[in-house]
Length: 288
Image (tube, rainbow, N blue to C red):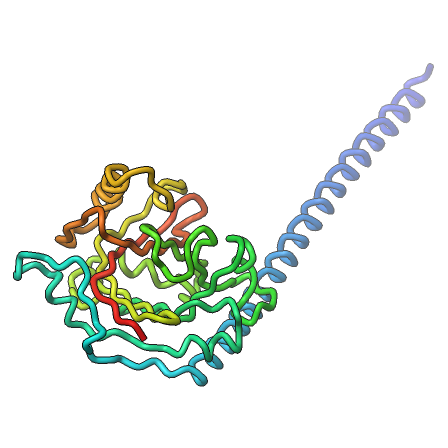
């Protein structure tokens, strides 16, 4: 074999390796371009749908506000102070003076027969009708008008009685980035929110009753089922439960709790693995 033939084969081998290497690089570049293109398209699709859902929610909310009258009402002979505190200096006596709110729930039922009440949380965006159905899934991705919407709606746990007579009554909703639904509940975690004591109430208007609730605990916790317990085997078990959720609070609301207290729990996402939780006890109610 002469040297010319040998050199030619070497060059051919190197050329084949170079072509193979170039082809591999080209394939990798193509895969990367396809991956990033798909990711961009998917991301754009998600953002586009997110904004569509937001607009639908804003439109529905605006329509509800335009057709619903929310009225603050003075106490009457029908007003009942719940679990009165003996200590007249207790903050309880400051909060029972707040006016109740009244909303015609029967009118809202004409728009959605699952409507059971109206929720208002001071110094947040939470001012919406509350719904209740046979599961905790439907309103995770359906709006007040029952159309499909990833923003969902605010709803009472299906295990609870719709008249909020359980010991622990739990309301859920998504924490939307635009602060709709329960997206503004995170404000309760801030020191400046806590520092204004006028913020420490929740008002709930029901079909046959208007109620006032005093907040006693706010916190963030890893996803769990304990704080959404609805059944208790004994008074002692319930008191233990109250002590646990009260002691979790970021702040001290100076609230005394007992076996006769009926509580409201608001729960929403803080992150993928954590929940923002607010607890309040009923302190005043009035029949309609």
